[in-house]
Image 1 (cartoon, helix red, strand yellow):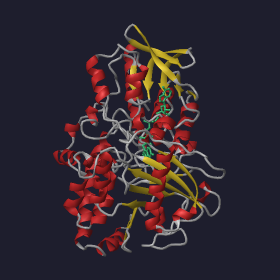
Image 2 (tube, helix red, strand yellow):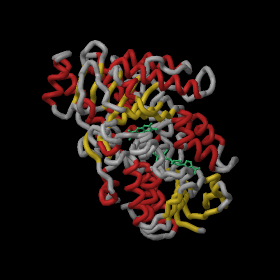
Image 3 (tube, protein in one colour):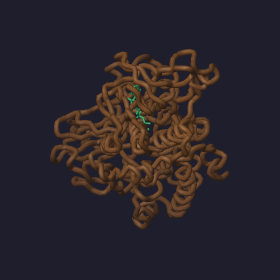
Image 4 (spheres, protein in one colour):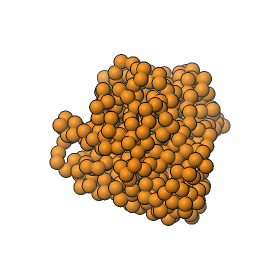
Length: 512
Ligand SMILES: Cc1cc2nc3c(=O)[nH]c(=O)nc-3n(C[C@H](O)[C@H](O)[C@H](O)COP(=O)(O)OP(=O)(O)OC[C@H]3O[C@@H](n4cnc5c(N)ncnc54)[C@H](O)[C@@H]3O)c2cc1C
């Protein structure tokens, strides 16, 4: 069978690429190895009556242009603001709640430090200004770090801690800010480059406001389902259970793919939504790519420190520092267990030696108070994102006993702040970094297909056009990298449409 375009994978980025290609008239097929579409943007039903965003859980970076061009609302996409935005629990009876309501947030912050009210406002303004520069570059065909303002470049090269502590004196508040600088990243908040990761998490406008995050009705799988709906409406085929074993190369060009069952499919263009290690290290046959390029692939920093624990609870967590028996505001926020920046840095340093953090960073979400349809009546899903849990442990493999121990550490940690949680656990679903690799195909469990640090961002991420003619990247391994943005998918489709138009000697069209 011959196609104009074959897309490897049906992660949300691959689906975006397929949708744009089909919308622009190309005969397109997406081939996904797993039985589910969506990659790390999925909703699963591990227990009867529950809908779980198994991997990613909140949205911000999904590009407004993609939402509009593909009319995702018509295919069921609906996101709503997560507000309040951040709740940090402590063991000394105090807590900190930040929301979109500036006066309420100011009152919360002033209880710790009057100076920090002004400091936080200044920090927010600057962070949004730098993050806007990232937003403006999300779809750049030729992204260049040196086009950013000198101030933004300096902040991105520095550490998240340095930036937070320049404006804030309250340890718990500085930690709540710096936390976004380490998400998915195997570096501590005091390490250089985490400033970029922090700003990346403020670069989205899916909720209409710079940096705001939201929940998706029906869980994150609804994003993938909506994009797939648009892709199919425009004529794209999407096949699951179809693992690509290798890329067909003829006359020094990618000419199609071979599936694991031996089926050959030909195409003018092949787009890979799989990560760079898989694409260049496994799918392109040996000896095709030049040794210098392959060295770069081997040196790609891509070892995930993140663990996801989804917990079915019989009741809401009741935090000692802010007791609540009903769904109160703070339970809608991102719940942080991060008393100060040194706690986060210690968690990193312990793991840097190959040992899981004994006192991990926890970032938790409860979508069920705002959308009870996701769980049986009266029950709640606590999504826990935890660091640092090395993919490669110094003491050997992630055995079942070690998986159980990691989950127990996390639940015990939560129990110190919300003592009712350990006894309210009815079921749990755990993804260690090797589980993330097995289940979602994330290379070495890295949630972004490789670190999002200077040296691996903008022009230093893999480009959409690869050294093998006819092969393109359209997943998180290319600019602007990880998170549910769809931007790598749209950039991939745009390059293919331009190149095919040139090859066919017709005027290039902008993907729309
Ligand atoms: C635990 C966790 C929490 C996260 N939280 C958030 C969050 O809240 N918000 C956010 O914005 N981002 C979050 N992220 C990051 C975000 O989910 C990812 O960066 C993003 O989903 C990656 O999308 P992608 O389409 O580039 O790749 P993927 O989702 O990784 O999709 C790649 C697809 O390619 C398929 N594939 C690979 N090899 C082959 C092959 N040989 N043949 C066929 N198919 C193949 C894979 O099976 C997979 O479906 C999180 C990620 C994780 C893991």
